[in-house]
Image 1 (cartoon, each protein chain N blue to C red):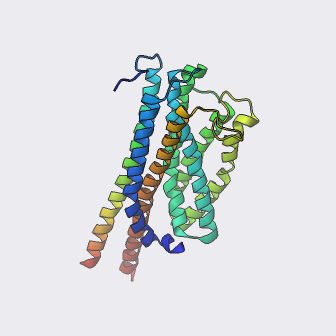
Image 2 (cartoon, helix red, strand yellow):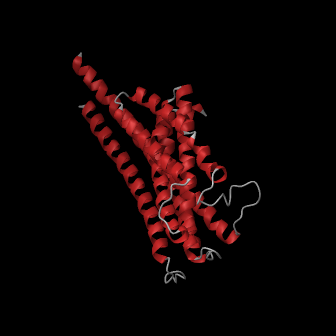
Image 3 (cartoon, each protein chain N blue to C red):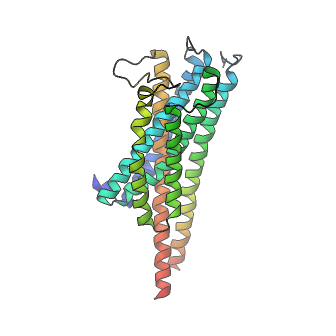
Length: 242
Length: 52
């Protein structure tokens, strides 16, 4: 297992896995979009506008999932000091930020016709907005610290501290009175959603996950190469000094 | 392909949400792919210079 955590071996594996992740992602997203936009019935209460759910809900799930990956990778980096863990955390942040931005904008667009407002400072929306700021802060901190090892450790601490926001997002609709509806799928009893809507939703969620893997592999490979470039430049500077 | 909701009063909201989601996903993929290509080119250039 640890053999695959070698950056050079991982780079080759990621290069081979990337086209598969791309193909699976495009297939699932295409099928999910077709079912969600053309086949799934309108909601009896919200009507056609409910079709926004097929992008909003998977994006919101992925926004939280990516932060979870970032926190676990950061924790692994701090414990085992493995460079790939930090590479994974750093590569995940912009992808998670994009999913969070999608969740917020599509949620806002969905909110206008259903709630009559683009935005409300309720617990769910506010905690997701904080998640967006956490991603932005994490990326800004990486860019602000020049020394890579110190940047990795400092950002890892931020990622771990920020993880406290994840249960707040998940349970905000239960802990406070919010405009946002409670969970329809991830609940103790059976999902409160019909199969005709559940299948496209799950396909889109799987498609978003495969898309994340695809882009993560691209970004991790880019970061591994960037570290090699930095190493070569550093060696050249040191050779010039001797 | 016929879109049953195209004439619905909410069609604009649906197009906007799906369009923004698609555009943002395309943007992050494009940026990530460019990052990888840029670093690969840079590394190849540095390694070629090392050999000289």
